[in-house]
Image (cartoon, rainbow, N blue to C red):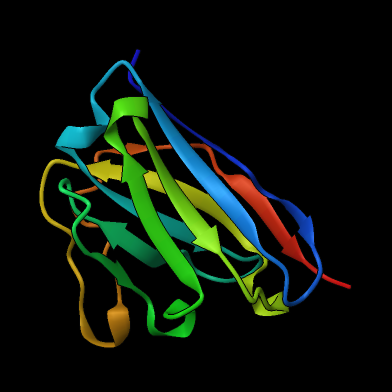
Length: 129
């Protein structure tokens, strides 16, 4: 069974940090570009990061650039999203997704979900004092 599972979400105070993990089962994550997406209550889903198969360069939504860092450990079949200087507006359900194709990134660091074939069920991040 092909599956992506996110973990690492939780409640954190503004200015705090969290590291999200995305682990694959049933397929080799290293063959896929991995996107991180989020959806806040009442808002549309948006992409926040996408990292290529080689892990050489991750792309970011402008609003998280400098605060979020994507990385991958292909040996562990896992991708990470390190989030720092968290803000209340970062509160959302965070998903990872896998694509055989490249990361599709537009103006403002808009990260498209086009081509994402597999999706996890999400992990909740709440930034609140």
